[in-house]
Amino acid sequence: MYEIIKKEMLTPLISRMVVAAPRVASAALPGQFLMVRVDEKGERIPLTISDIDAKNGTVTIVTQEVGASTRDINALPQGAGFLDVVGPLGQASDFVKLPQEQLAQMRYVFIAGGVGTAPVYPQVKWLKAHGVAVDVIIGARTRDLFIYVDEMRAACDHLFLCTDDGSEGFHGLVTARLEALYAEGKRYTQAVAIGPMIMMKFAAATCRKLELPVIVSLNTLMVDGTGMCGACRVSVGGKTRFACVDGPEFDGWEVDFDEAMRRQGQYRNEEQEAREHHECRIGRDK
Image 1 (cartoon, rainbow, N blue to C red):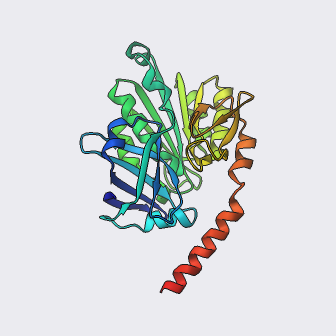
Image 2: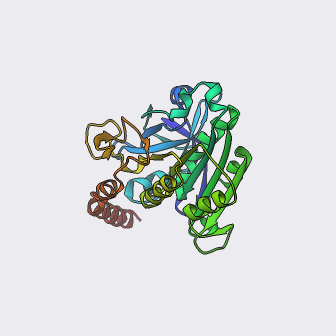
């Protein structure tokens, strides 16, 4: 069993868990993910690693409830554990392979939306530890949905908050905030956008307009995490790639987001049926 050392609810639907997984923690790098399974009947769920503590042998995962399986994960109490934790999987972020002299010339801006803020955090922390300039833009519908604000503020050079309703920070979209920063004279050499697919689509379009290279993470497409199921196929630069084995990070200018969004919705009906069945079973168990 992989014990949940610490658990907290960041919002009513988003949990953060510190999980004992020494072998995963010793090898994991920013950008990678792992697979968890609650029990023998549980579905394998891919989750991007949101923090790594190799010294204490733990990894941190953030889970947003979107269906039956993620509800089961969020229901686990501190002190319980997962039957399986497999990883690290996928390719690490490209910047971990860059020489220090090249990193020193870089200036990053991360664009995070919703629960996508969690996998941004270890990347920002790694870059700052290597002396790289990093700014972060976080967007949410309203201030109560922000996560990782204090952690991110401590890890980056400048943090910019955006809300759709104007309840905190910039009143508007993350893309509008990025354009406003450029209008103020800010310049970056690399952007990274992680969040809802539609947000990444428009972030990539905005970055292209600003002639700013951008990396996006397609982790939300993944199903089995090994490339066997083919559910995470996506066109990148006109070629077929698999988010779980070739990614999850890709050049945002090259991703066919319309295809990716169609693929993302392919199991929506099955997920709804599973959720309804799960709710009925819980009702019978009471």
